[in-house]
Image (cartoon, rainbow, N blue to C red; front, side, top):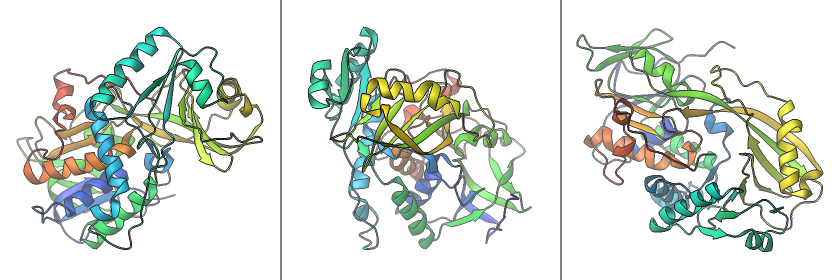
Length: 405
């Protein structure tokens, strides 16, 4: 289907955000909520249905179980934002009260090496104020009798502010309120990023519909398409689309208590949806980059890989029926699996908001706030996110995050 295009109302904007999914929407809203910012904002989104956006394919869960303290604190802000969203959004009575269904994430370790990783991670998490608990196999079995834990050495779980939240509601209200505050969204596509003669700044972007839009700052919030967007500015960024598969299934015999989002040592993960319905995800042994428009489902993966793992770990899941399935994309940062933020080292007004590697939804409040601060003040204020800035890529200074799903 051909792209529908909408022409912007103006020929110049203070900020042009390329990509209107969760990161672009967060940045736009936080700009409107920053008292010292009064500029015009344009969000350019190529598909306003968001049908194939990573935002639409998410598990919509959050966790504090990371190995890097900054990632823990980023999720803690997300939890606070979700639980107090109406207050953050100016007390708007239309904004719903939201909560976190804290069934927790259950990491399962079947080797001494991974058990040591869980122990080290817990020390980081507890120091940052997270409520992570380590559990022996016997303790896991006592609390969650449905698991088979014969091969498990150690588990890790946090039952405070870790679990499901309504990411769709937050996304919708960021867009709705930012529009009401003057942010302009257009369904269009940036096809060129035009630099000044010295190559030190972006002067304008060209849209598929032909308009050339002058801009003060450009934000690359284009998810798995981040590298294609960056290349238009003559920049390479190590982000590529990786396919991730999801299944919704109904159990013939539902579990008698909430199922944490369980990360099996195989990498297959599964969580509670409610009412005897569960959601699981995974990928094949081969995990190549794929085309931006490749959402073809691997129908054999369920029978050959995912279901056998589920039925082994949770024997009650031997009798289940798949209700729906889909393929989505991670925006995988192949450098270190962490966010890439801040300005380019040479194009100072080209900002990154890319490479979240599967944990972008839960990081979107802090990352949108931080990007809005950088645009307004030239630096971060509420939470120092400089370790994630782009310059670490050029300096070959990775931030190792060991808790990637």
